[in-house]
Each structure stands twice: as structure tokens, then as C-alpha cells.
Image (tube, rainbow, N blue to C red; front, top):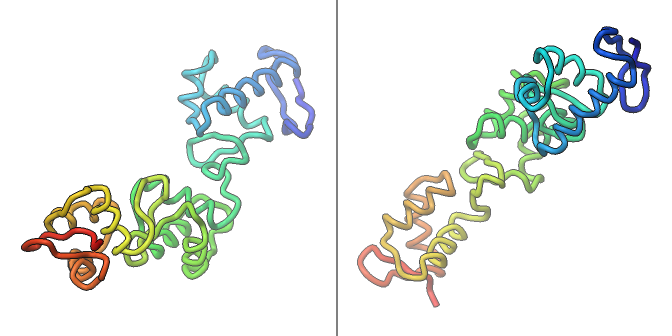
Length: 215
């Protein structure tokens, strides 16, 4: 069976025993709907588990017919999802951070993009740094180190983070406890935190090595 090219399908040839063009298109549409309903990319194995086909290769062959699907490495998703179809530098940064699952220095992100399977990998470290600064999805959490906003790291200065910690605590805290809590959401040196505590007017020492927010 020949599947003619349309806005939704690539031209393809299907094995007759799997059905005519209409049946194959219907199967492709089911895969698209399954991925859409999942709201995030799936591997072919995961798709195979959700659908009733003889072999994962069959699912992959059908998925590749759709113009609405894209894949990166082993995962398939909608073409509009940057995680499988990164169109620009920002999307590529997002994919790299998502895949690593931890904050990275912008130079490490640049290296990872160069080593990736992306199209057009020749991006400069400076270009990557510029995009990291501009995009709200990325948070600077240390010197040149960025995390995804969705991971819950705090934005702003170290002093802002300390203020947030003390505000949440609703009571004075020992400096060691302040350091411990700040380091949960920022990758900075302990000395930087202590320096902020001692020098910024918004913090007040209320007992030995114990601080609160200044009124």
C-alpha cells in the first residue's frame, strides 16, 4: 500500500498485509494521539506497551510516517516539542539540561551541544551564554552554572536567597542552618553566603552566629 504525501503524512510504502492506506493512516493517527495524550515524549518501547502491535519496529515504522512526530535519540514526540525537535539554541540548551538532570556550567552545555545528535551544532560558547541569560527557563545558580527553572532553584542574588530562607523560617537561624538551606537552591561558596550575611543591611545578628531579617 502506498501512503501518499499530505500535510500530515510522508510518502510511504506499507506492507499490504497490514492494511490499505486508510488503515495505515489510522494507525499512524493513533500513535500521534497516544503521544499527545501522554504530554511528553515516549520511547518506541513505551509506545509498543501502550499499543497492540507485533513488534516495536512496526510502531517505529508507523511513527516515521507522520509529519507531526519527531524523534531525538530513542524518544518520540510532537514536532512542536523542543525536547525532540529543538529548533534553536535555547531549545538545544533545554534538551541538554533535561537529559543531564543537573545544573551545568555554560561551557559544559556548549560541549554537550557539540557532541550531540542535533542538526547545526556549530554554536559558540558566547551564543549559548547569551541565550541562557535571556531565557526564563534557565536560572543562574552559581558562577556560570545554570539549572532549569522547573527544578526549583531560586533566582536572584545570594542575598535574595538568604532573605527567602529567613522569611520562610519565620524565626532567626544559625548561620550553619542558613548556609545549608541556601545551598539547596544555589551552587555558591559557603564564604559567599557568610559574607552576605555579615555585610548586607537586610540581615541582623541577633545572637552568636544567629541571624534574622532586619526589621
